[in-house]
Image 1 (cartoon, helix red, strand yellow):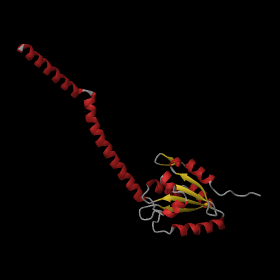
Image 2 (image 1 turned 120 degrees about the vertical axis):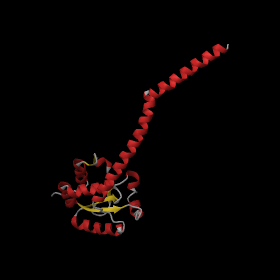
Image 3 (image 1 turned 120 degrees about the horizontal axis):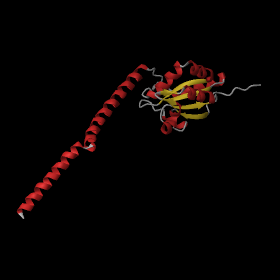
Image 4 (image 1 turned 60 degrees about the vertical axis):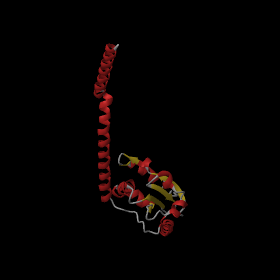
Length: 196
């Protein structure tokens, strides 16, 4: 009986040892080490992307003014729009928002888009930031940033009536914006010219 117990113990120990040795060589065991490397790699990649975005953001113009009296500015634009027969394009966002800054830069440096905007719109950058959330104005337009994120575009007719709200992600392409989609958006909401 003792002999059988000793043999059983030795066999069982050998089986357990063999399984443990095998487990260390299995893809699952290797993957757990790989997963740790992937997590470290992902963290490093994320950090590199954050750094690149911060560098890009630092180079881009900052069109949003947290100190501006947005309501007074928009009132002046409405008066000017009536005289010029243009609509008002409000780009809501902030200098903290890389996509807001990218859109502004894209429009300003793409002659075809800048021409459409200058011809048809008075353009305004409505600030949303911790310093000034412009809550009253955003509430007046239905708080579109809460629904769509930033930037978000609010189009007013020449009388200051809101005629459209546009989320920006549908205009994106890769790390920027689609020329055709942005052009179509600007052209669609430009004031309609009356032809006699």
